[in-house]
Length: 195
Image (cartoon, rainbow, N blue to C red):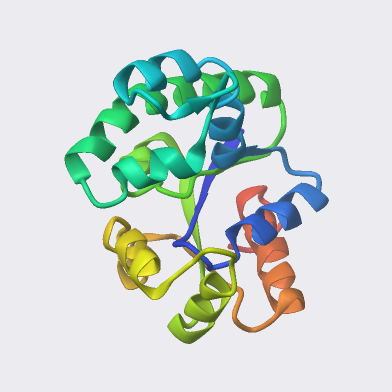
């Protein structure tokens, strides 16, 4: 089985692209969804112990947690030390279940930031022009320029991600263009193309 890491900075269209792989029959592990589930389960107790007051009704309140970690890299690293091993365990279970498929996708927003490229056979970066990215993110409820800039400071720059990836999926050119690129990536990685 070929393991493809799918990543991209905030607002680049990664979730939409991951859905395109799913629609094509490729098993996809969604790291964000895994974190959301952990914040309602196994991560609640250790996160609350490390950051008292962020749990409400047995669930980690993501906004309260975000306020605690967004501008402090050392605090963020403490959170990551709790959550990343739990996500890795979920990812391992997903890969065991997907065994036998010709291709599986690990949708990991911070793939380069956490060094997960070493765990995949190839990386596809979802990208779009900066103006498109900023417009998408700033249209989200509660998002501000300052918050977006703080998030982007914590991410490997898009240009570097594109330079390091084997594949770039441009979502700025529309859904059909992105879907065509996804089909081409699948064909290459499953041996169904001339690459």
